[in-house]
Length: 366
Ligand code: UD1
Image 1 (cartoon, rainbow, N blue to C red):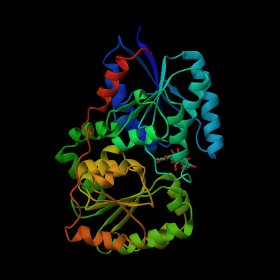
Image 2 (tube, rainbow, N blue to C red):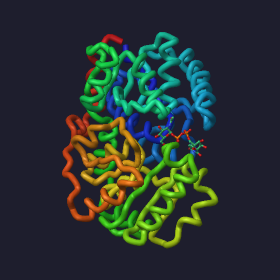
Image 3 (cartoon, rainbow, N blue to C red):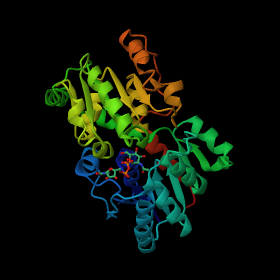
């Protein structure tokens, strides 16, 4: 009998993680019966549907339509709705991805109904309990039955927290599977169209993404960042696709900080467009987790505007460095002098992570 498995996605970074696994297990109908469930944590077209399109994902079987709210409201709504789906479907396994509220909500709900849970991207730790994602990671890992880690530091963290070794599987980074496959779909004429649309030239611009509460929820710190980016754009074009969370807080102040046409503040980009820009950026300034990983794979310098990262391998092996507003100029100088470190691609970040996960699941009694 095939394993009936619900794959849970909720927010933008989940979509690139669910797609490769769905595609892989779909190839083995006698082993797996996959069901895609979208909680609706992210719901705007640019944050959700556009990603399903670029990733060739079908419409989800279930859309819980939970929308925004406080953490408790969002998490609670997902749990209530997901419980109904579990009762109806009675799956053999639930697979959750990453560290968003949907990950925590669905893993807890499944476990309480005795449904086994697998967590893809387990073991990452920032040790910063002020991040909601860190709470989501720790709770999800503590209760998951199968833990798929992207890198060795993930295994070490889990073992330190007392998780049995036989539940941990280092399979590599599933987001790189999506990156590898989208890169194959980006040809020269598509790239030309993106650069024309954005009025940019290859290898001569800075790509910025910021959405962490610590950077964008306080108007004063967001204002300082915007002023810095505007000044930077006088030297080199800056393109800043703005996440809805940031947009809310930027409203009313964006015009004050955009003094010239080289500072391009835009709506969120599609996955394919974003990767095209990332591939040719001089450097990336971000506070996203996934972008630290993509830039390591693409060998693009990445400045992460955060005091910590749950993805230390992107620093020790890759092209990433943590920065603050105080150290950013110094780091940018290294890039412009061509003195940025050379990274390497971590083990198993090779586009075959979904295959490894499917092989492991096939060999298990679930
Ligand atoms: C969530 C994740 C974060 C991830 C990020 C990627 C949690 C705790 N956080 O943060 O880990 O890096 O997604 O994008 O799960 N909004 C819209 N349209 C949308 C989605 C959100 O307008 O499609 C607005 C809502 O008003 C909401 C705000 O953006 O209040 C933030 O959304 P939310 O899902 O709460 O958290 P993110 O900051 O997006």
